[in-house]
Image 1: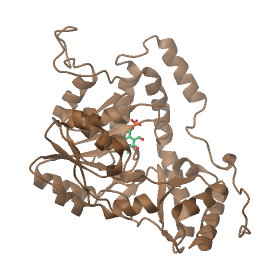
Image 2 (image 1 turned 60 degrees about the horizontal axis):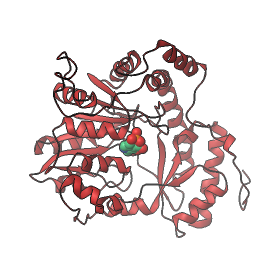
Image 3 (image 1 turned 135 degrees about the vertical axis):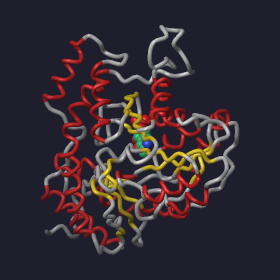
Length: 395
Ligand SMILES: Cc1ncc(COP(=O)(O)O)c(C=O)c1O
């Protein structure tokens, strides 16, 4: 393919499918929700989606909520986590994974990640365990499940909860079991960039009856699960996290598309991977046979050629490729030094984390947008050639 020395835009927005995707099925579902008359308050669709999603990921209980951020907060609260407690978390994630911990009053403790995957490094997690640790919060970055065997063993030995932030991992599997069913509890996001989306929305998933019961009460303004009358039945200090019927109506339809889309994104990533493997300056994530399905939320690799990543990315974007930088190292964020953090946790954030792999990823990670993996195969073959040629030019 003759693309060498080509500086013009080689791809247009039309080459890569827009996201989210919908058709008349979503339109019909929205009209039905509108005409049903009950637009919120534990409506039929939110309950039905909770049930269907629980079956899909293989857990006993799912609670639909407003956002992934709220799902994390509710999950942590439902585990009884608050002031004085520590939660081990990666610094290579979206800000909400960390802010949720501080929001419930606990202290985030940063363990390093694996440089090839961005997922929690079990050896680093082990070093962070103290008598104050109450949970390990694992993030399946880019939809790639963390090493749940190693993390489960650490959590079990330490007697702490293992929780999943599965915001990237709808449909991903670890040894045949779905992300969200691999620990004591999980939080999902259905925000609009996610592979399963209702525009906004989130869910708490668990097999633990006690966690479920507390999360349920917290999300329903503190009401008891059954009976008690309106105010007499308020048994704890909750919030209103209930999902609107619009979101659930869309999510029910989107769930029907999820498996086929995950498969197509995985096939798309395989095209990129085959062409990019061995390209100088590019480090690809390794294969792990324990990962039996992948959501395809985004495809992450590292650029470690001589030219800076910003130049590599600029050239990719000039050609029209939907690529961006990965996460920054979260412990640098102003949020941790702001008075809001101290008010919530009762402490200043003073720890200097030692996370060399996070630093590396913050400098080198490149993300290829997940929805772009749904493009036509010939487009992805061409994208792989263009990425390889830019790498050869800049290495
Ligand atoms: C890893 C991760 N956790 C949590 C969240 C928060 O989800 P939401 O945006 O629905 O609050 C996101 C959303 O981007 C995320 O990527």
